[in-house]
Image 1 (cartoon, protein in one colour):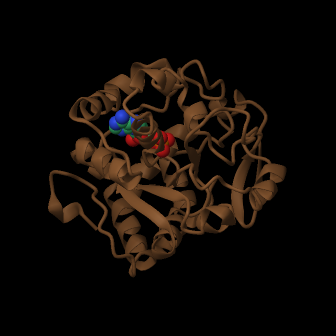
Image 2: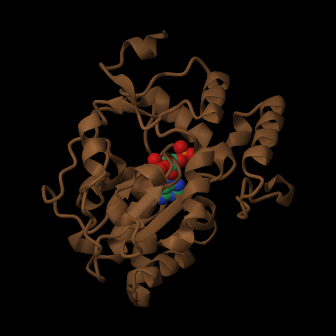
Length: 296
Ligand code: A3P
């Protein structure tokens, strides 16, 4: 156990339906209760594996839902605009939200969300950048086990031995059910490449019309620089369980940082695992904007 781990607050990993969770972030009672949570079909749901750009999509979507009145929403802390259903102490009705969020896998999301009435926005990111982002997040998060080093974390991630389980299962399961759901699939890399068109796509999916001025304003409020410095989005004051001296939500915000962490052998090993696990997966995720050969 290193010094960073020693200085962490009390937390306990536990299993639910074969997936690892961390108390007090999560609780068995809430996860159990969620099975029968009757979701309001008018409230869209953002779904992602951790560190895929969830906060970015929460910001974008909550501003789209503001019907042009961005000032009425932008200073409200993101977690109240788009609460996570599985984070203690989620209770519908306690806060005024127009949007919900989850990192849960397909099986664990309330069945009421899987009836084609709930609009689901799935956010995906290339797994190598997810691993790097998640690794750094474990170091600064009070309720996540500090990995010994990157290599150990990489192995745990590939085995699905991390909170929320396997990235491979998460994306494959959600994607395989897309035709039974009212689901829009967006990627972190698409947002990096052309945020404007992703905002337009999400707005159209939610049946919202954006005038040019509102669109530009949403673009401005979604930049990395804005979100990193804004108290409503950066969680500096709002989340006590992040050690902000070590890291935070807005770390680098780039595509391809994995190249600064993966050794050549680790990269080759991961690629071979990916090929096996994702052989049937039809989408090509982008790993690097500068070289097509790095696309899987
Ligand atoms: P990095 O750790 O690679 O920087 P999540 O919101 O799912 O926890 O994902 C966090 C990741 O999204 C972090 O990645 C964070 O920097 C990135 N991110 C959040 N807002 C962003 C923005 N406006 N532009 C680019 N990246 C953003």
